[in-house]
Amino acid sequence: MDVIELLPRLHLLRFAVGQAYLWRDGDDRGELTLIDAGPAGSGAPIAEAVTALGRDPRDVRRIVLTHFHEDHAGGAGEFAAFGGAEVLVHRLDAPVVRGEALGPPPVFEDWERPLYEQAAKLLPEGGFVRPAQVTELAGGEVLDWGGGAHVVHVPGHTHGSIALHLPEHGVLFTGDTVAASPVDGTVIPGVFNLDRSQVLAACRRLAELDTDVACFGHGDPVKRGAAGALRAMAYA
Image (cartoon, rainbow, N blue to C red):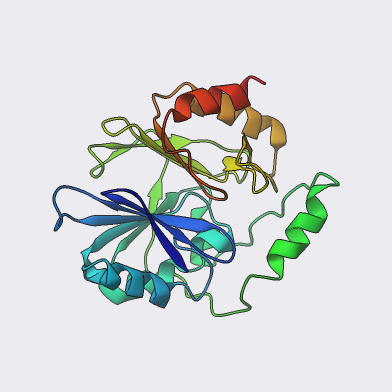
C-alpha cells in the first residue's frame, strides 16, 4: 500500500484496487477520519500507515464509506476493530456492509466488462470482517469533522453512494461517482454503475460545488482547481 501526502492534513492510501483517504483535523494531534477502507485485509496495513505517520490507530474516530463495494468497504470492520472507530455509510448501502443483503451487481457497458474482470483478479478472496456496528446516513447531514463535512447523496454507482464535501477546505471526496483516467489523468464519470444516467446527473451536481481538491475512488486526485476539471467533465 502506498501512502501519499496530498495536503499537510490529507493523505491518500493506495491499494492494488482503489484507494482511501486519511484526514486530520486541527493540529498534528487532531483527530483522524478515514474515508473508505480498502479491500478485505486492509485493516492491518492501514493501522501500520497511521502508526508510521506518528499516530495511533485509535486516533481514527470514524470511517466514512462512500459505498458498499468491496474495494472500499472490505477493510472497514477489520480496521474499526483496532480502535473502535465508528463506521458510517448511507442507509441504502448499510445492509450490504452489515452482511444482511447482497449488493446489486453493476450494469456493465460492453467495454467495462474486461476491465472489471481484470480488477476482480486483484481483490483478495474471503476475509471480509463485518463492522460490529454501522451508523446510517441519509444524505444532507453535516458531520463534525473537516470543518463540517457535507454528506451528498449521489445514487447511480450504487443506490447509497455518497460524496463528502468540506467547504471550509475546498476538498471533495467523490467515491466512485467520479474517477481519473489511468492513461492521462483526465477526469471522467465513474464506471461499473447501476445507473449511468444517475451518475451523469450526480457528476453535474458535484461540479457545482466549490472545490479546489478532488479525491476520487480510483485515479490520481486533482490537487488544484478541481472545480474547473469537474465542470469540464460534467458538461462535456
